[in-house]
Length: 166
Image (cartoon, rainbow, N blue to C red):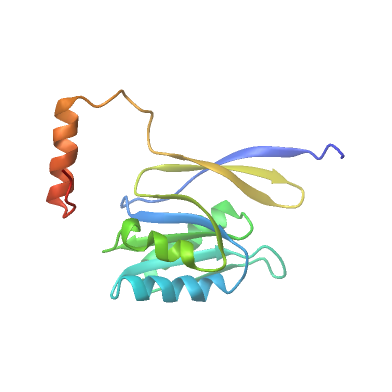
C-alpha cells in the first residue's frame, strides 16, 4: 500500500427554497433514466430535477426532470460535488418518504447518504483521481432529549400530516 495524498473538502448543498432532496450513489449511467421513471411512477405529477455525476468516459453531469428550475438546481449541486456516480434528486410537491423505497429499489442505486430538506454539508475526499462522498452533515446539532411536551407536539404533528400514531 502506498501513501496517496488526498484532501478533505466540505461542500454545502445549494437549496434556497428548503426543498426536499435525496443524495445518493449509484453505479451506472442508466441511473438517470431509471430514477426518472421511478419518481414518475411513484408520485405521478411530481415536480423534480435529477442530476448524476458520471465517473468515467466523458465524466459529465447527466440530468433529467419535470421542472427546468429543479433540474438546473440539481445540475449545479452535482457539479459542485463532482463525486463519481453520485446523484442528487430535488423534489417539489413530493416528499422522500413517498419515494425513498422506490429510489432504493432501482438496481443501480448503491447507497443513500440523506433524504432531507435540512441544510446539508457533504464531506468529500479528493485525490488526484477524483472525489468521493464520505458522508453528510444533515441539519443542526442535537439540542437535548424530548420531554412530554415534545412527545405531544410530535404525535400531533404526525396526525396533522396524515400519519396515525398511538
